[in-house]
Length: 400
Image 1 (tube, helix red, strand yellow):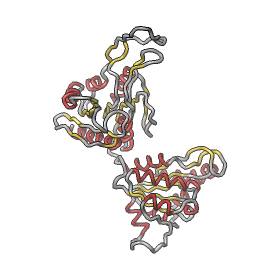
Image 2: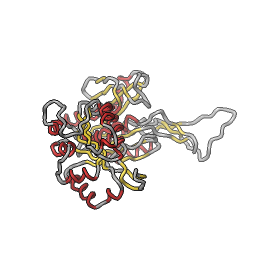
Image 3: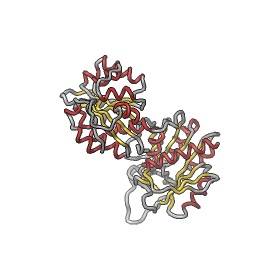
Image 4: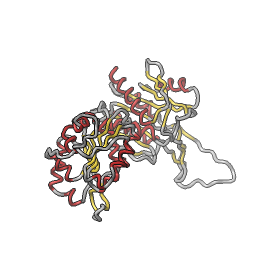
């Protein structure tokens, strides 16, 4: 998911963290959002409106009584246009005004008029943040549905150390994405597998593949944004876990098999995006295998087929999606897997197709569904493809 077609009203208030708004605007624009910036007069002392105008591509509004604009009641029109209303940084002063309905500048007046989801990123001195008055105001706003991106702990601009640093702009951008997302998976449980498995030869070496887990992690993140309770069974990867997702870390195929089947009974959807090793060494040496002058032979045995086992154990109403990575005969091989593994959907891609494969940020897939023609999708970012896959899962569920 991105923010294409969405209008984000970003309010910048008067704290030293206002300089981070430049990074946040840039991130929102990269997500294809239309960004309109409002600033308090205090915020203009920390960062110039011109900086945010250049980054957003829109005029910054800082004066409630500015007459140099097309005729409309500006705070009302902006409140109506907003798909998400963000205040970052959000000072104790603005938090207090918002909690008690005070509207004495462009930011607080527009906030009072909007019905869009509101995201606040508090930033202030530690003692101010911990003050009972501020904490009570935060509770009032949370009770009204305001979403907070909690401040971080660290050394503050005032020299104190503690909680109060504005959250990283990446975390705020993620909160905006979640606030803007469809909540069509609310109340549903989604189990996702991701990454490679490793099969140990000895304490030093293992058999594995080139999977980085990007596709599976994208599906887990998209499902969480859309309201699902997500369990991610992950092989060894270097990716940060998606926010709000329960991560079960495994190494071998047998560990992933046990984790998936243990979690499967309570799931509504299974998306098995992991690249699981088909074979493992018949024996794992206790000590490092020493090289010799001759060759080495390693006997391999078959790993359990996780997707097939899940298909055989599925309960009524569950929807199962597999992934098929091929280098030839894509549709023939993937269609056979769709049937033999008792799946509803099979996401098939060819490792040799440009823009597809392991480690890329894009993928080129064909989605196979029982009783339907193959659906070939164009090259897509994996984050966008993740939403496409979830849409198809919901369609299968609705047709059952």
